[in-house]
Image (tube, rainbow over all chains, first blue to last red; front, side, top):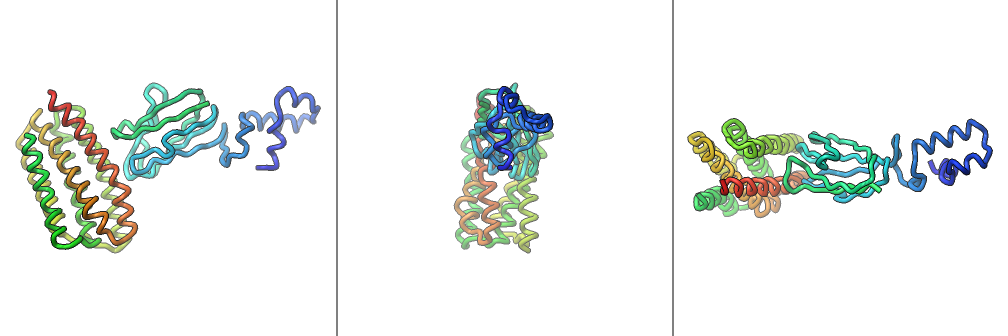
Length: 132
Length: 174
């Protein structure tokens, strides 16, 4: 939606009031701001609900990319392309439990932090999620 | 015990060497080797899931059943898609016999002795299958999808081997 970028990218709550835009446009802009809190990521392809959607592929006992950096509010979907289950587990932080072969699991990166995670079912599988 | 493990590895490995001496296996033979190799480990896993004493050993057995079943389902459906009828051969027969001998031996053991024997065999088994994948199966596979499947599942065998070795060293300290 490149045409709508100009609508919400430069807007901050303060400037929005300065424009004196009609109530309908203001409401629309607020809605966009609410659903896409980080305007700088407008160039990225996938938006869904609360932010950019990132994908980590699980295949051949590896998380790819092994380290992923996202912004707060983004969603991360792990897709299991292996022939058996895996987990995405950062102890005490998040846990997918078993993701079946061919299935996926989505996590909303709500809190900033650096999360090292493992597959609890296999000894050598590690990944890292950095939430800015 | 360690000597027994090496001996077991040599026995398992001899089937592979034999097949190699007779020329590289065909795709139908590779399909039979893959299906047999997985089935043997599923069978041992099912026995260990019931008989193992240690929780870690039981969990490993459950993992072997799940993972090797997943690999076998993919191998069988690929074989069907490619109209490959798995063809029995010296390597698949050797794997099958080795699996039966292992089950017979494990049936006579219990407790800690069972756990050690099961895990020792798992280490030797995964080492020999990895050896076969690298030296015989992957280089011989003609069909690109069959070769790709073998390459895709290889890391699982490495992970299982490392997992089995970890448990082996834990058991050795008990």
